[in-house]
Image (cartoon, rainbow, N blue to C red):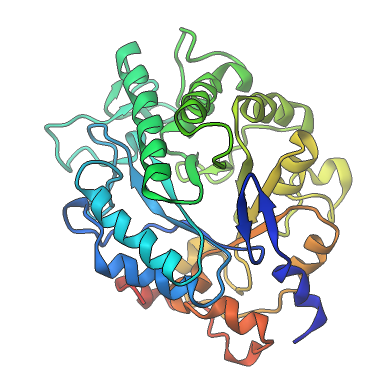
Length: 369
């Protein structure tokens, strides 16, 4: 095995979470849970990754107990009888020696209105993006109930035996819609002119989750600058603005920031520290002192948006990744598409079998490989 890959296989420990390596399976929507109920197909899917050396598995997005909280059929629930299926999943992963957490989300107004039109979608201001109405603005009671639903889901994750829980606060979904000035025009305490003002919903959600799971259970928060509604938008234009965004979230109880960017090797603030500067996860770690996960086109030739549109992506060397990890820029690395097509990706990297890495084939999105 190439020495340069050793860094990926160092153990990681945090708040009782013990991982055998630094590789995380990124959450990726699969939409194959009939009527929102996971079962043996999902248990086998995640087990295959656990038995092939993925250090931490984060599930596909799972929705909280709120009306219109998912934007596609087949996305699994994380409430009610679906929890029986998730019990089967975590048992399978633990049986294979793995560690896992659900990604808990609410997709906000990203759901098209023609799907289940009798249930309007909810969001901070009834917008899908700047100047684009969709659904209804949440009332104070809606907001309080949603925060409680996030907390209940996280508590259920702990009760079922999951090792962590991740809140999805990225990619233009509900929590992120509160962050974004383009979708949060509220003039009450849930809105405001600054990112710190608009972070209140996320802060209160994290506090409620922390109270529900106790002080030791690890909480991960996934964040992004970009939105699926606008790939170029940014919530924080400077490190100082990023500090105003992230520091209150860290104080509220986030243990790990999962920092999503489209290409992990790109510097977050090139104008500050040059083209080889820290990426998003690097800046989040520097600002908050918390552990971070980086993600974005790991080990693949093509950018992920093009890949999901049907383009194949070939396997590529990992030098850009290992160089950044060797300087402790971030702590963990999430791998997405490569693990959709190849459940043995981590094991192959560990034994230096670069010639066996297959890349990503968009046809694999049609099944749970």
